[in-house]
Length: 473
Image (cartoon, rainbow, N blue to C red; front, side, top):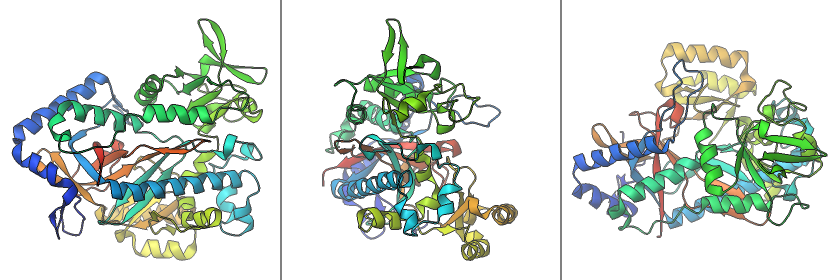
């Protein structure tokens, strides 16, 4: 790797950075074949556990395990404290934005956002206009993707406010590391993430309808075993201690939603849904959906069930909306963002489009509704033919794209076939917002681009995961 990338373990100025000294000493003292043996054991554990995902659209879409790297990523308590403060600030602004967009739309009246960015947006749900959400918590569960470019600078790469995934990998990565490398843990005071299920349960309980019992009944609604994230759905339901249900397990009666059980119907107060808006209620959205619950939206409107996350939150995931986040923060909170936004060119604006077309070789271009690393162009690594084909798409539908400079993403030491090597990483911390408080477990899911030189960390594009250690200091 070139020296232009910040190496989180071995910065060019200091040699080994202080947080990584214990890890560096441990790596020097452990034989390569033992690390490789532990890596194989980790893979075997993941296969036994059944922690898999599928890639949609592939002819051979068999279940896979996400590659796991046995070298942890280390973040100091000071760095985490600043990051956590920025995460809480950002999610607070996202909730305020959604509450406004679905009510008075003050931000549009103030001219901060162009109205067509909301009203022409397929993720905007007019059905949510004027609906009261308990505590205005639209996004109880957020995943915010963060990248680092130097010792002090963190950028938010994107916001995931719809149905953020990956928390099961955060929890399983930690469990496997503690099992396989207890001697490494003894060198550090690593802050725990194992309490995430309890924090999630407390968050979901806090958003229950006001007429719900003191111990509300909570269920996780999954599209079913053919969904790529089904492992996570069943894992979380089990860890949190709530029922895992599919649409056909729920029924609406007299403006309440019930779960079918062997003892008869049981009222459900909170649904942690992993089913997209389009499919959640065939009477309101797609009539051909077999994944949702007919009449669920009428129960929701009556305030007799809470959904996490709320319907319509996908508009906050939009990458064109993302580009306005500094203005959104200032408008609702009167504050400057603690975590930076990546400078973003909105291709829907003629001047920005012209600049992007002239500089495709230096930019990363993304679909505004894209995810999983699909539908994007990484200009510096793309060949001329690919860039020309992408330029044609940009000219045809400029409103569907944004462009950003290619960030010099930080690297972390990673165990690859040739031994230890730097690979690019990002971080997805999970922010839980209840009506009572905000909860953030220290760390998150570190995703790593295992291919040399690659900046794409998504599992569907060959990325892997690491355990993330937040340590005191």
